[in-house]
Figure 1 (cartoon, rainbow, N blue to C red):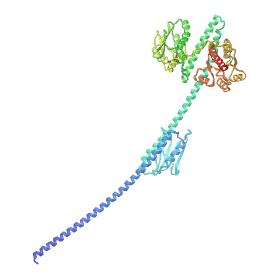
Figure 2 (figure 1 turned 135 degrees about the vertical axis):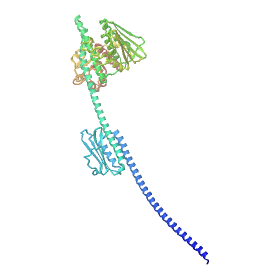
Figure 3 (figure 1 turned 45 degrees about the horizontal axis):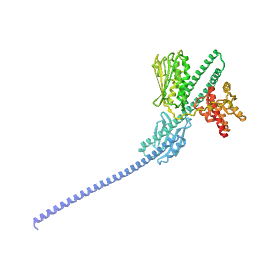
Figure 4 (figure 1 turned 60 degrees about the vertical axis):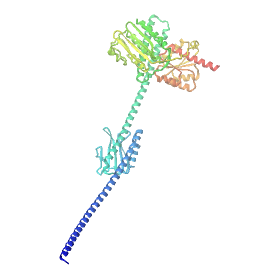
Length: 587
């Protein structure tokens, strides 16, 4: 073989060897790279698997936390509603703890709470494993975790007052602590709010009972003082009226007139004081009835005509024709307002005139009282309607009086939904303007026939039940002038015993008496079937006692101080009714 071929073949072999070496090296490098990549893939796989485990564990923890929080919120909502419906109690606190340990993570619970019996002591309530709860007497912070982070204690307070504490033993991750604290603080706030509501309710009930007791005491006092003041006044005025029918010397007549005027003045003062007491106690009521404004105003005119003449004053009374014939309202209170205003004008008018103008304007009963008196300073007008207030309250003032009239007038007008205002010029006079929203009444009341007016009351048999000796003598004398001889007893028990053996047509029954009062006596008589008229003789003008009279079975009320005409009207009315009932049964 030629050398050239050998050389070429040798070179080819050499090239092939180098190629093989390169391929081996490349294969070895590739194997090495593959080994490294495989290792990296394995590590990455391990990392992914570890991450999945962590995510799974965290997800499970988040779900458990969410579930734990949901359970707590559900219990919180339930007990919020319970504490709104019921007062906080030992039973509710124990139920709350029992429900809390129904959550898997909570192993034990405790509430230490101020005793609900106002003793000031603390009482502890437990649920779950009581031995797991550690003593924490040295703890002073409002929120505290134990060293092993398993027990939490939160102070329950109301302002600066410590009401107790809530302690829970919880088996949970540390990451839950913030959520647990927030939820348990809500529980403590709920218990504190329930306790505060209960204390507020207890104070409110106590204040209500105290107010009711005070109101009842005030009512009892007004009724008592009403009776005690009007009873002797009844004797005074009644005796003066009876004495006026006797033969008197001019000097005696003057003394009697002075006594009568003093008694009437005392009656006005007593009425004002009692009305003020009733206003303060919320007992003053407006009673709406069908009345004739013309008759009411004629009565007012008759009252003040002679009085103004005595003082040398001109009395002008203008009653407009367009005023409805009948109105619905409280005539007694309207009369009281007019009497107070006109009397006030007379008192402060030395010379000139008193003018009263009455009209119907814009569906309202309007009247004004004008005088030419001393007038009122502008700086006194704002306080003029205050109780016990006069323009001059000093001890040496020229005009006497309680200073209650205008205050009562204002209250009465406001109770009737009306308005009052005044215009005054110092040294020239004052005008009071009043308007009341009264409704016209179309139907006319039944007229009293002549036969009824002439009813022979002297044929009636009467029983008077009255404890006051003065009033016994007085009514006996009044009835004697009417031709009636009554039987008289001193209390309700004597009346019942009297009626066991005798019958009468009409009973006049005092309300407040010893042994058995008029209310109880009337109840017993009605219960035993007594059906004849029983007429109350009462010194009270309160709506409470008026209602009590009718509730116990009385038929009518004659208020003290009464006069002969009051007694006569009552006898005519009930005598006619008795006569009518007898006539009907006979036919």
